[in-house]
Length: 174
Length: 127
Image (spheres, rainbow over the protein chains, first blue to last red):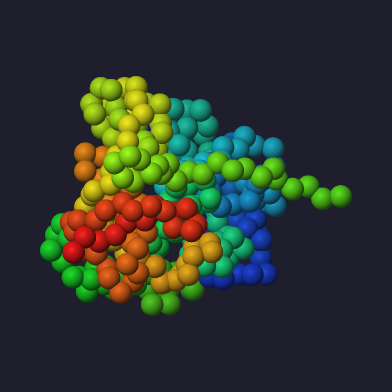
């Protein structure tokens, strides 16, 4: 059996200090259910890194999907992708017929500065948060390929141009 | 009544030791493939064989570097950090002692000299 995307939805992006992580999920899941013209699923695969404890369950209850099996995936930046991959496998192996895949983060309530892992990570404990970690990769990349920082800026320009094409309003701001 | 987490003193940063032959990092080396690792892991991240305790440093070369302008924790920004490949040893993350005025170049020689007041490994550029 081949898995198909039957419907999709998204919350708005941006700093939403007056909304809970689960509220963002409710908006997205409701939109996806309406788009797919269904009101139930057999299971849910939820990717989240910084989501507070229980965010997957609260997200589903508020979207009218209480009682289904829930698999929550934390796999760093690949959490949502892994949830999607596992959902696809679950369909194609006929474990389930119809599933929900959800990715949810509410970084506004978790960080006031750079995104970080936590104090048990050797890099963070030594003063290197995620932007610094990526800067280290960039430093090495510039060296190995004999490039200037301006060369990397073209990537940001290209990504902003792609972002401007999205239908989600706040993500379209270049 | 409130609940608080139990204070944990475990530190994920590499273990520093002021050895007889100079500053060192106490890590492990793989018994199978010789791969060095700053974290004291029981099995080699590269081949899976068992490891044994080994000491590395103090000489090394910069693998990558950056200057941080938004500080982490109690550090005062800006500060410069580098990934340093210790000679025949692991890659470590270290504070560059010379401050943001002297940003090392990738491949430049550095020397492990100790730890900062916050316990980060510290290297000096050898120019």
